[in-house]
Length: 426
Image (cartoon, rainbow, N blue to C red; front, side, top):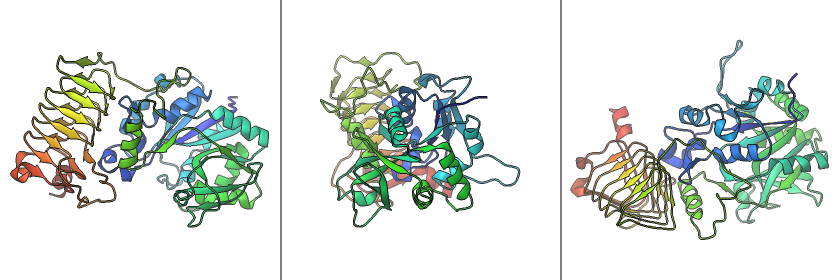
């Protein structure tokens, strides 16, 4: 009989709709980060660095890129005969079939997978945050407190607390109450969406709530456990943790990596971040190139100038081009004499010569002012932008665009140009 002390269940099925066009073709955990990684690399690396060798990855929305990236788990040493990493999409069952409808419903639909390892404890993780965490330390805390559930929490500014699920704990860290996004928070301990459950507690709570629509940990499972007197404790985390759920927070988190002394350090010997990288040649810097305070991925060729930016793998930045405060993802080509300011450019984009991105005044975006904001220019995967055009701020461009899509050679601030959506609607 296979028995594992602890297994991890990693929720990676979310769309991440606040990342706009970046998640139109892939799940949020598959989005590139830091020039080399994908967001899911961070919780996966924390698992292997914490000694957890059995991880179920629950996928649903646009899983192809995520599944390809994880493969059989070789980069994270999760290619095991017993345990390792398993991709767990929703599947057809005898009696009925359904999509995952909530975080806890997704876990409930995989009871059989968990049962097969006879775990003592189950670690529940989200696949879309940037952090490094020793889950072994959290497990030791859980055991010491003889808890039924331990919830990782992080102190936040009290004025920010209303955006989170808030835990109220006594001096012994026992959770006495909790509030979901309270108007007047009574505590500043925000739930990180990371839980350790005693297996029996989790199994009983999921079975009890199996018919609840959209079964969710924060809304249903935790209240059920409180009502039934299960001991719940708050494990306080004091490291770096970032929810990169919006384009602005995603851009900020990437920019923090290039600080002189980065708050989130990718270079620690004892806590490596593992990823699935294709084999690339070294970076190449042309005779007239200039690079300051930037991350440059393998296989990238730079002939122009790059400042304060995160550049992925296999990118080409031609001579005379200037890239500043931008994120350029894998395989993108920037033409000669371009000027790119405060842009997020997805993978395999082609930008012609003499293009200026991020020019002019800030104007709210015409279609999604809540997403395309803070002066950023966002370019979708595989987009083509012709040469000799000027593009404003808070702009989103997606698809193969032509010279006639830019009246007078300009796309004003706040505009959305989505050629793929136009083709679908045609």
